[in-house]
Image (cartoon, rainbow, N blue to C red; front, side, top):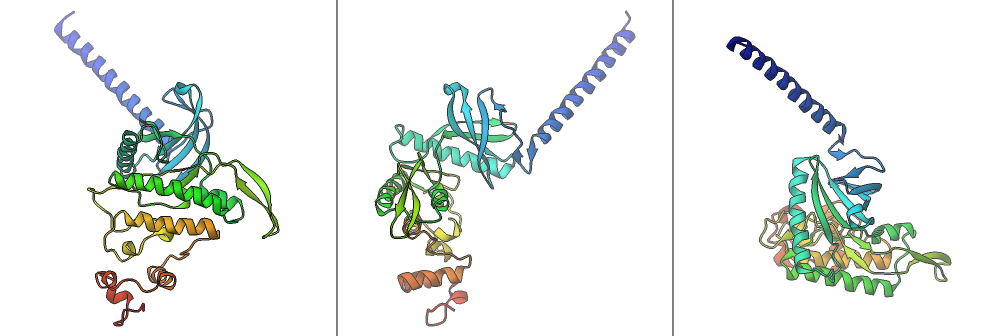
Length: 312
């Protein structure tokens, strides 16, 4: 066979190879697109990720992605919660930060003694960062909601408060601020309950049998040395220094704890508002006037307060 025939054969082979590679790439892109909707991974019950995690059901959904109930076949078929992050760059970057915090927690609390949820592992699946956690039960908010917002008994509140304070103190000791404490981010380890009659309210109510809780969702947790966003926390649990944009530290978590404990005790949110001025007014009605040193440092001073330091 001459050089001309060899060159023609080589060219035909390369053309065929390029077509195959292009076709495979197109099919892979199409399959990836089929598996994603608005950034969320599309899945069905029975799907297995990484030849390990068998999806059983959806536990919850948020702006970050979804949390699913899985069987972990590499852990003897035990149940886990798998957080599947959206396949979008900003959420992948946020997931890296969360994993960094969770690894720090494991390093400092290897025996899970400080009431923070434990990460079991993480991996990438088709562009989705997936984080595996111990499986927990209902959040303290969902249990309250399912109980017609009947307040928790004082003995339950005491035990939950002790654990929440212990967990937050542990974070602060390790130069971390959670920044998003709320009843939705405090989960019962086991939310099974008994039904008892409440003579005061003249109705049956649910009483959780085990008040052991775990602190979850470290997606917004911030180390002391990291950049501090100006606005943090879910509105109803936001500290006054955050609203006034004065900068914040560990104390903002303590404010949130106070709001949470009130909600457990009363059955409703302490500061039910979506407006900064109204929020500050509600704070002042309960706690008295804010300290002058805070008011005058805020860049919102002239927009929110009269010359006599009273809210407009």
